[in-house]
Length: 312
Image (cartoon, rainbow, N blue to C red):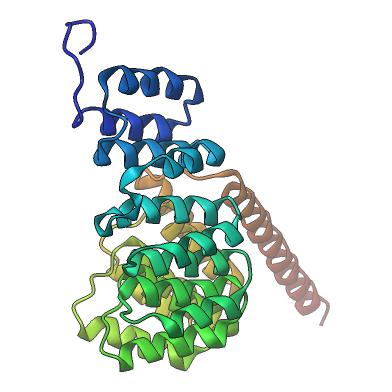
């Protein structure tokens, strides 16, 4: 674009800045920031939000904060996105005090503002603070509920994760795939088969497709709750199976002592063109050796039995 002599405008720069942030190219941020200054676009609201977001993703929070402080539109009601980007950045950097201060100073908040701060406290292990914010939140969306369910899960509070999921359904909020996966993972962690079956029934009767993530979570739940046949049945219904789906099923067979089935599924996975990884290859080699040892013992047992009969 530049080689052709075409000057980027306020609509082009945000896409470039987003790419720089995603790629972590710190060396380019100053170059394009300088170009924005030369073009006089630094105070364009669309460009300013993209600049702050880029510096947040590059973990240059100090620069992002400086840009925010210099933004004349930050006091306007329509500047929510700018505030949310910075709050999310502060939470990601562990600057929860600064994030909270920004949150309290906002001229107006939306669900994204609340969700970012709730997630920040959950990630830092401050579950009670997250719960306090969640209770205060005036309008909770599916992301809010999912953040709580997932947060409880990752903080080891599996019963609370399932209770939050149950409360969500009672409020009439339809979960998304991530909510379902988090709830099923909580079931798997504590062996809550009954709760897992209820979730399975819910997704079956509410139009959820057994895509990779949800299907894999179901297989994992049934396997870890001792129902390997149910896990295998779900596995057969999954529309698209990725490496994790195959791995969970193979490990499930192995966990239940079903060596032959684990090896068969490993071979099926390879035949399907799914590339494995070292841990799964190690399991395959271990199971192969185990099968060989079992074969030797069985053969030795047969020979001993034949010898005993000849001596009778």
